[in-house]
Image (cartoon, rainbow, N blue to C red):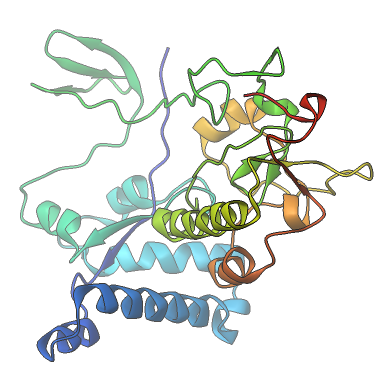
Length: 301
């Protein structure tokens, strides 16, 4: 059967930063430069996203603005309007799936210089020479990279690990995420999953900072076990899912649950940074125990 794939938002960005370059020339250390540059880029993105001009735009206008960036580096003399619409008009809204950036428009330069070409079609089948298209055409190929149809693991975030907690198998969708990095009723366990609508490492670093604070607290107070507990009143109502990527929707039924507050997802770096780096470690959700506690109180992973 044929497999359809939507075009993606591909945005050209300059792969050089004048401020960072000047800082390097005056001897700023790479570590400090990285910190300064990251905070500045986050602030610039916040300013852009929250600007009055963007706020007044409809979703369709935001989509068209992103598409126009691609059109600006792929002029009509290189690709007709009809071809451009076919290859660079996604079937989904901006940020419902991850956005692709092209450093210094390298992807588009390859097309304009005819070093690369693009085909948007449905895959009918594969044969010994390449790909047969549903339109009747074909693409001969020496190597085919399969980059769609991704299937996420079925028991997140444990993947293929067989985890037993107090004698019962771990099942991801029966647990609730705490601070988007720990799991209800799972002792001494944290995981990292980056942002979907932002730089993966921004969130990964926040989780690392929180886990280090948590471990330091446990060492100071001689705790051996930490475990999030959902209160009797529940974890609250989760936000609506704003992602339309097929590989996410296909596996959504396996995901751990979310709520609100301590049980909500991390999705906004500036507020998440304060939440993960400054909020008190001890709260109403975390349960701390030591090996001196009665055995009945200690979960075993």
